[in-house]
Image (cartoon, rainbow, N blue to C red; front, side, top):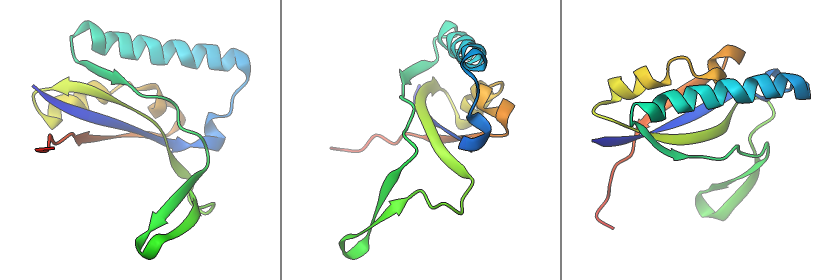
Length: 114
């Protein structure tokens, strides 16, 4: 079985909600993750990422990021287990980030010889 990373991307502004709304959103996320775990496909839980970042570029140039002109930001991640990228993409369907116009990027994790 292979392992895949889900990268959750969305517009932070669309994700700002009241505390009551967050309880509803948190339940949707938990239910979605529990459904994947019930299938024995859950890998590891990621953490929500902060709004700011630093971008390290060639020649040791460091800039602030993400850039203010972009609307979509990487907000969190997790891993799942699946036989193929198509199966992993199926597991990403119904992810709560889709409810706010976000998306889930599915990437295979490649095991290196380290």
